[in-house]
Image (cartoon, rainbow, N blue to C red):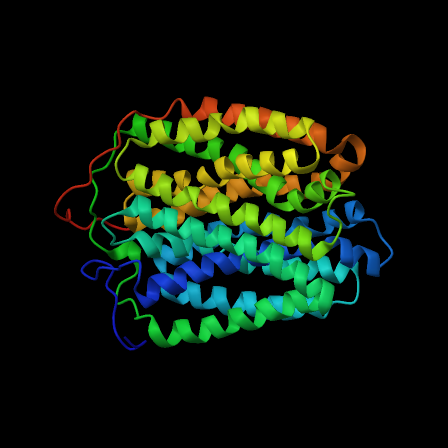
Amino acid sequence: MSGTGTLSGVHTRMTNASPTALLLNVGHALDHLFLLIFATAVSAIAAEWGMLWQDLMPYAVGAFVLFGLGSLPAGRLGDLWGRRAMMVIFFLGMGLSGLLIAAVPGAWSLALALTLMGAFSSIYHPVGIPMLVQNVTNPGFTIGLNGLAGNLGIAIAAVLTGFLVKYAGWRTAFAVPGLIALTCGVVFVLVVPREDTPPSRRPRKMVDLPRSMLARVLTVMTLAAITSSLIFNFTTNGNGQLLAERLHGIVDDPATLGALLAAVYTVASLAQLVVGKLIDRVPLKWVYLPMAAGQVPLFLVASQVTGWPHYVAMLLFMVFVFGAIPFIDAMIVQYVDDRMRSRVAGIRLAVGFGVSSLAVYLLGPTVKAAGFTTLLTVLAALATLTTLFVSFLPSQAPKASTVPLPAAEPAG
């Protein structure tokens, strides 16, 4: 299949093994990998520049602010302009950003380069995931598989960064993924067919929901996205230092710690496949509720233990954290027509990750002032709020129409 073909988004079916789906899943892995390199390498960078890692951590906040806020224009362009073109920009932009970060001379230039990377990283979620699910028959499993790919990117970030930092320096840890992303961008141009119609101009497929139900779903989606994104950012950015503290004197080698953390993320990521299967069969609410509620006792237990018991507790709470990831995207698929999914995803990401970028800014100062025990207790409180929000979801999902409805004028 060449880049000269067409992908209408209406008649072409995409399977999870197609070249387009494989590249989109690799893109998700790269997106999360890039965002977590800094969190894994921060101690080495800080040591080189004579700083504490807690004081260097806030310099990454711009990347996560742009990761959220950039989703608004990215989602709009994805629907109105085309998702394929936006994904090409994503791959090439991430690659060039990685090479730029590898060349920075100091903390403020690092902050600027990370912020630029955050702008490009914001493209993936509102564009890549709607592109992936636009014509599949099993969206839950497809989202779960995509989530697995994204979290394997987190796992790879932990082990690859730890290895490269130890044997080649922290700059190489950004340069190598940068070259991989550039290569993926070239392959994407060559093998992914062109769209002949942007999503906003395609025929409508879903019956519009009553305004009251839509407002209720969007409110739940936004609030749950905020609390779950805070939990995600606090854990994925803080787990490396948390594990180093709780295993101090047992395991102190950075590469070994990276491998242990990668094992946690790899095992936890498999939960998304199970969750994805369930989403296709069980109403969303009844799968999401136990995944959110299960985090509460696990965070509390993890806050009180050290050594290998803590490692087991971390593995268990990350199973539930990662297992909850597919739900917001599944809500969008179930309740929003494909013509405007990228824009709705962009809005929820801008709000959710925009607010949760505070986690990156506050992580270092919070741990420095109050310690990881307090942080884990706060995470238990956030998980309690997520559980409360999810309880207001409708018990049943709406049904899509079996035949496309007449095309409507594109909104926005």
